[in-house]
Each structure stands twice: as structure tokens, then as C-alpha cells.
Image (tube, rainbow, N blue to C red):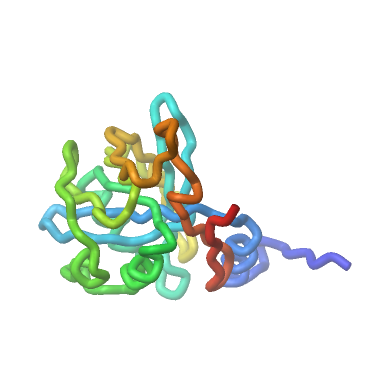
Length: 197
């Protein structure tokens, strides 16, 4: 028996549940951004991946809130200051990352709220995240709006300018060891995946 969904007549919230539960596991981008007034923001996004090596391009997509069609602070910040740091989420910091995803006021610094340590970036304004083993300093090349209703994504194309890797997650050949990196991935609803052999 097959369940068929007509996208044009389906509720947005239902589509979100089916699509985000089907396309898994997804890596999580933990994004540090800053607005023109100097307000810092940290937020995780599971609509995220690498799309190019030359130039090195990471892409993530803040989705407009379905309930009220508002945008997230990260998108607002990036439209003001076209820079961000994309960090990776490990099992060790996943609970803190989850806390940073709450809807805080624009002036609330999620570094402080979620207990992360700011590290000054070398080439851009938003700070890096000390607790994440990999930080990508990025300039934003383009923001592509994919729609104007609640649930619409905004594709953010980030060019990596500098990569910072904690040597503790590297193997004897100076390459990344996936078990030491211990990345957490996102499934649908409240399900997450751990890295295992």
C-alpha cells in the first residue's frame, strides 16, 4: 500500500515533517553570525551540506517559520553582514547546541546563554566556537530566497576562507578521524544520529 501526497494541497507543516524525516541523516551547521549593531547569534541548521571544492562552498538554509512566516536572526544578520562561521556539532556539545536553537531576543548572546566560548576569527567579524572541533570562516556569496511563505527556505552560499581543525580529531596520517570527530546528524522530529563504527 502506498501513501501519496499531493504537494499542492498538503499542509506546509505536514510537508515539513515528511520531507525532513525522509531526507536523512543530515549534517548540522552551527552558525555564528553578527548584525550591524554588533549583536551576536548562534543557531543550528540541518538543511546543510558541501556543494563545491573549487571554490569551497558550504550551503545552509534558514527556513521561514511556518507558524508566523518570520525569519530567523541568522538570516537577518547575514543580510546585514555577509559573513558567518559554520561549525560542526559533536555529541559532546549537542545539548548546548539545542539550547541555542530556542527563540531568544535579538540582544541575547547565545554564546553566553548556551555556555560556548567565543574565539576571534582571523578574517571575518563573527566569532568562532571554541568547543566545536571544526570551524569554517566564511564570506556569504549569495542569499537565494526560495519563496515568501512560511516554510520557504533561503539558500545561503558560503565561501570558505579559512578552516580551523582541532588536531585531537585527526588520525596518524593527519586526516580527520570520523570516530574522534563524533558528529551528530539530524533525522526527523526529535531524532538524532550518533557516529558509530
